[in-house]
Image 1: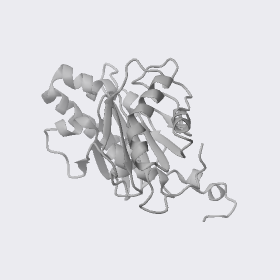
Image 2: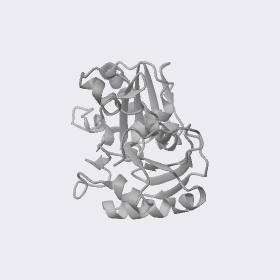
Image 3: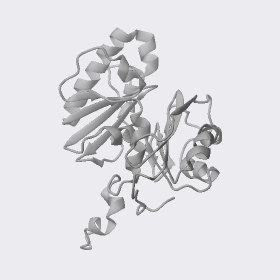
Image 4: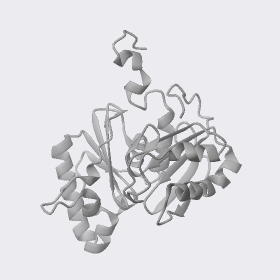
Length: 266
């Protein structure tokens, strides 16, 4: 695992950014500002899928990019709980064999030992969308529903709100507004559900801004509130640049001396 002192020093950095989705795996080489230096490649996510199978699929996906641009850093967004570069949950891949998995380091070793950072995929999308002021919440609409919270540009601890019940029958966000629900109920009813969820999140979080990403964000048909906006699906790749900016991770990782009250704040 890389240290937290690694920083992106210029826009000449080549970051291999990977967006792991429940239905698709996407990757591109980006610079330190999140601008793509290569085309974005995509392949279907294998199902069923073990950690080893996912590493194999990702290594095969990024091989043409690595050969073309020789990345210096790697960022990964993964749909589940990620802590210290390790996967704790993988709801779209199953329960068995997906706890405490060092997927980031495994893939990095396959690619020659690249420095790597991995976070939740909604959080990575959020880094490309947020403006850095107040409370900003991210909701991704894809295979399931992903969430992330930022305060003044700082990533807050991850909460799996997608697994929180949203209806009287105990149905969670993933089942309520995920892609399977959209296909079952139709776009019109699905849009009403998303509108309901926006209202719930507004009351729960009291966010200043809500960003909606993911492939199904383009399927929204109702008028969004003034403090709600959609973002490009490319944000899942572009946000990978922010993982390497000095204060993009929580201050407890960046300034341990300050948080331990030893008097050092720089």
